[in-house]
Image 1: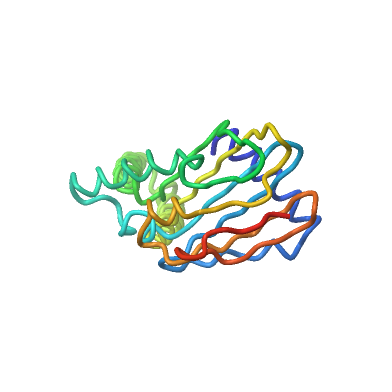
Image 2 (image 1 turned 90 degrees about the vertical axis):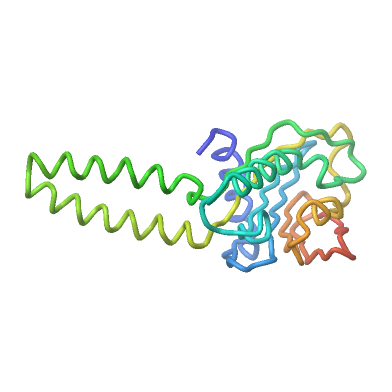
Length: 208
């Protein structure tokens, strides 16, 4: 996890302590994305999460060159949340962004390395191999679960010249990700907490 993700998650977690109603678990649903927004003193932190089905149309590791290109194109598009989200009324510019595809994108390579390490340990110590098998099974189950769910995550920070935005509009995000049918927003700022559900035909939300 990058420094940006750590800082963002820390800041948003602190906000959730003050406003526990925002701390609900994001469910994995096809066609649904979750947008967390925190505003404060000329800064906006945003986290977008959702199932891979809504971002690229599949939730497995890319199986061919076409799917690899689809993932690469989605990463490039999602890095530009300043294009996809219109933060209105504060002259906001994108300061930093990070796109994290699901672990499934690298699962095959990781599993190969893990298998090689397991075989090497088997040659040296049976007892350690047994312990490693147990750990491997646990890790494999965890990786398999994450790969099956295929959640994407995007984090971004905006710097705003005129305070904080009064509203956001996600029309361009719906255009870029046509498989999304709704975006559920949780927001917190100086005015308290807010949120709502954005739809392709109703993509604007006032921020607290």
